[in-house]
Each structure stands twice: as structure tokens, then as C-alpha cells.
Length: 259
Length: 282
Image 1 (cartoon, one colour):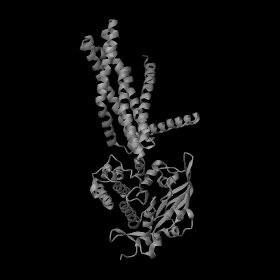
Image 2 (cartoon, each protein chain N blue to C red; image 1 turned 45 degrees about the horizontal axis):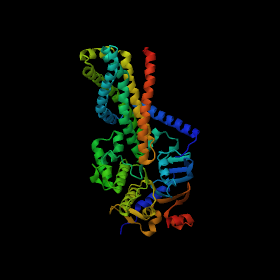
Image 3 (cartoon, each protein chain N blue to C red; image 1 turned 180 degrees about the vertical axis):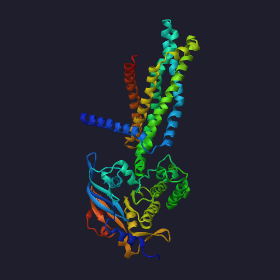
Image 4 (cartoon, rainbow over the protein chains, first blue to last red; image 1 turned 90 degrees about the horizontal axis):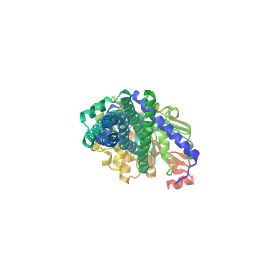
């Protein structure tokens, strides 16, 4: 393995952040610029959104179920089993729904985006696109960012719903909780700031997944090995960023809304 | 026997006219990771001329094409393409210029998720103003030029290497660019397919009078271009009569260690006494 001096390493990292920032900024700016690639955006929305639906439904349902089982044991000990709906509902909407959905979509789509764009880079298709007078940022990056943000928003809502549903099924099966009571408490506990926090996160996570995937794809060098490396890095980086951003958004939201 | 090649002499006459430079490099330098690839090179490509660029692997041949198209920025120097200074243009301005300049990539660089038709019509679709009927007609024309009309619904992965290069040429010429850049269009192909590609390049030069830069490792391809012309009547490439060879609008440019060590026509290339060049072309 080649040794690299700390200053060169730091320069590379700063340059990477700079390049990522340029890609992210241009992806946003291009939303308001022509030409707009509606067909490409719709196609990506189908691939990212509809394609991710089964894994989001399954992970949401079983996460909610697992959350209900774990919290049910503790609540039963204190005689507060009636609070299980509230706990699952808050946990899913504020935290687990957005994060689990984000991580699932990151695993599936950040890698897909990075490998697709990386392959295009190493086979000169990106250069060919530029040579044919088309801006790859507008044609490839912006549709992916836009569709991931929009679709992750809706996928998270679906995941939340199935998570609360899964929690309800687990509560009824393992703790004999009345489903009507469960749903009433799960619904009543939610207030504006919970829903707001739960729906801001997927917007940020979707942006992270798509821009990180595009950045690693467009930066891919070194043939198929480089594409493989870019794919792995995209999943790792987007997952870490999702968890990190989640922490800060949660803190910020609690500071703003007081809970 | 066919009549003397009018196209060749006509283009040579045009080239002598003032202001007829298609591409000009002036003291252009570029380095990659501290390795100097091009070191202050200067040359001109005249309108209607085809210039073959030679050099060992890594000598910067393909870099010249990417610089001319603005896909890379030089560290220093000036590049003028069709009267526009590429080196000072923004990416958005370059997209406009690139509509007038076409490039055929080394490995074709076809979009693998699109059919041949969608690849060839890519630029027309991007313009968004060309009616579907016209797109169909122009795709047919472009594919007919490269004799691949029957591949219209195929994907690039279903084509041979030579067919992919020809589709790449069709994609490039569909908008009738004023300048064509060929990056090793015959690299890795068998002699018969290579000859087909070279015939297409010669056809572009002699029938449509397109200015071209052609990067190649194969000397015989460039020599063929310097000694043949395209006969429209017979629709094929034919050898030039000996007395007209100097009139072919064909130049040769040889790179070595980041510098141009030869820039001239076939006659002066054959007569050069430079030891390296003689060894290179022998």
C-alpha cells in the first residue's frame, strides 16, 4: 500500500469535500434551469421509489414489530402497557422510519447510482455526453437527486405506517393489547413537531443518498475495480452521513420545538 | 479509370485562403499528476484538411482531441476551434460549440442502455425541436452512411467492435459537424474492418469536406488516407494517380516527449531525415 503524507491526505479530503459541494450545489441549481429532464426524473423515481417499496414495507413492518416487543416487556413491568402505541408511533415517525428507510434506500440506490455513473465514466460515456452537447449534471445528476428526495419522502411515510402497523400486530399478538386502543394512542400522541421532524429527515437523507452516489460515481477512476470501490464508498459514506445528520437534526428539532 | 480527384484539389485551394483555420493550438501545455504530457505544442488544422496524429502510447494524442473539444483544460496556451477560443469558454458556452464539432471515441463510448437508434439520434432528442419523422429519416441516413441500417433496434452490446465504431461515426455525423475528431477509430480492429472505417473517414473528407483530426497507432491507415480518395461515382475509396498525391488535404503530425517533432504532408514525411521518425514509420 502506498504511503501518503498527512498534508497530501488532508488536501485530498478537502478537495473531495469541495468537489462534492460543487456537485451538490449544481444538482440543486439545475432544478431551476433548462432543459428539464422530466422523463429521466420519472424513470429514476420509478427505479428508486417503486423499486424500493418491497424492502421499505418489510423493514418498516418488522422494525415496528421488534420495537413493540422490546418496549412492551419494559412497559409491562411498570404496568404501562397502554402506552405501547404511543411509544411505537413516536419511535417510528421521529426516528426509526426515516433512518431505516434512508439506510435501506442508501444500500440499494447509492450503490446503484455510483455503479451506473462510474461505469459511464470509465467507458467514456460521460465524456461522450459532454461532447454531444449535453450537460451530464443536468441529465444524470439532477433527475436522480430530485427523484430520490421526493420518493424517499413518500417511502418514509409508507415505512412509518407499516412500522406502526407492525407494532400493533406484535402488541396484539404478544401482549394482548386491544388494536383499537393501540391505534387511538398511536395516532393521538403525534403532534406537529413529531411529523415535521419525521418528514424533514427523509428530504435530507434523500439528498445525501443521491448526491453521495453521484459524487462517487462521477469520481470513479481505474476501470471496473474503481467502479466497485466507488460503489462501496458510496454506501458507506451515505450511511454514515445519514446517521450523523439524523443526530444533528434531532438535536436541532428538539432545540427549536422544546422536546 | 476514374477522373482525377477534384475534391482533393478543391480543398487544398480552400485551405490556402486566409482565415481558413479550423483548429489552432498555440503553445499548449498540460500535465497530469506532475507528468508533462504536452509541452508548448503549436499547430494548425486547415478547413477541409485531415491531420493524422501519431505518437507512442501516452504521448498525448487523445489529450489533444479532448483539449480541442474543451473536455480538458490546458495548463497554459491557447486553443481556437472554428474561431472560438475554447480555453476561455465556460462549460455552457462549450456545449454550443460542441454542436459544431464531433468526436468518435476510442471505444465508441456508445450509451449501453440505449438502442442504436437512440444513440445515433441522441443529439437530436436533446435539441428537443426536431420532429420524430425527421429524426427517423436522419437516423436512417446516418446509419446508411456507415452501412448499418439493419442495426437500428439493437443494443451496443449486440454489435461487434467494428460495428460499434461505425455507429459511433453515425452518431457523430448526424448533425453534420464542421470538424470531426477521431480517437483511434481503427484500434484493435481487423484489417478489413479498419479499411471500412478509413473509407468512411476519407468519404467525410472528400465528399463532405470535413476538417478532421485523426489519432491513430496504425501508420498504414494514415498512409492509405494520404494516397487514396473517395470516388463518388463508384461509391468507394480508390488510389490516387501518382501525380495528384501532393494535392490530397492530408497532414501528419508526430508527437514525442510532449513536443511536435513533425508537422507536414506525406511527401515531406517520406523525405524526412529525422532518425526517430524514419524508425517510427519504417
